Length: 116
Image 1 (cartoon, rainbow, N blue to C red):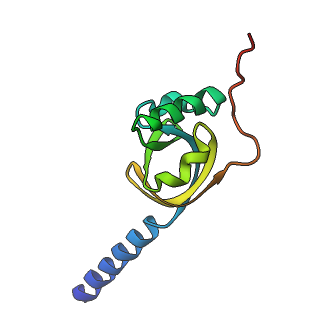
Image 2: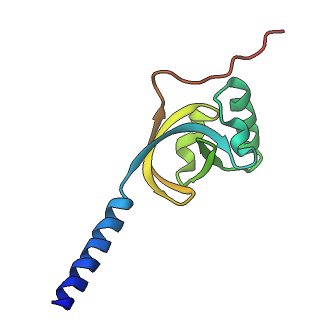
């Protein structure tokens, strides 16, 4: 009897870990590892800064609700610097193994640039 309970507990643990590692979709802003949450709002200013930092060797990251996520598929983010995106992938701690990225649609929070 106790062996059955142990086996059932183990099976439950295994299946819960598999479900936890399932793909998720997160909407956030593409920033760089140097600036991080500084670019938590999409804007033309953020895009220019992110591009400059990446050209200087920084890596793209995703900012979502104040948390910074490392991204594995760097080449997928070149067109989205400083923009709001929808990223689908497997989230583990502060990293995302990206399966797809696309521009976020609908209401986007963007910062208006001041006119001079």
